[in-house]
Image (cartoon, rainbow, N blue to C red; front, top):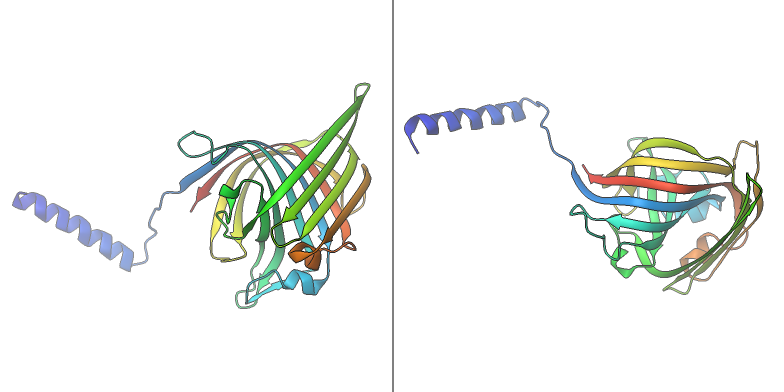
Length: 254
């Protein structure tokens, strides 16, 4: 290497160090980890006991309310960054999240505190909170005329610790709202870890906590045994229900 080139490289390195010391912003590229091509979702918000919600959180975090969100995912196709199927390419997943507040900073985040993956390759997952479990789904639709579409779903989760969760849901489908989203999703195992979700979702709000239209014909949520039974039991109150016949996203690490 010639002397002029060595001197030029030295100046570049010195400038970079100076900028870093001065607190100048440093650009860091995001890393894409997956693409969820197609997925159907049913999301249920439950009112549980405050003690049960708190038991799911790490030290230093306090539940903002006695609420637990359940997201049942029927994954039709997931791809890795190389465009090939991610694990088996399809999966059924239950994700559990709690809204929590940090005692020191005062910031509020939704933390993924647990979940189950039918595909063992999805355990413990990027958030390090998923467990093995069988997840069975039975879905049927009855279409009458042009617009009346009655959907019935039965979800059954059986966890390795002996816990079970059953959800029987029947609803009249409406016209969903398609919207883009960008979210930062944090781990309950390590709240400093998060992933960035960018995509679009068609959401059909079936029951809202603020009242309004209620197109849920019937719903039953029952859990017993293991962690599911301890946290949910069979007396949890259903606050809201939504269904997403279409969900697609790309996932990035910051």
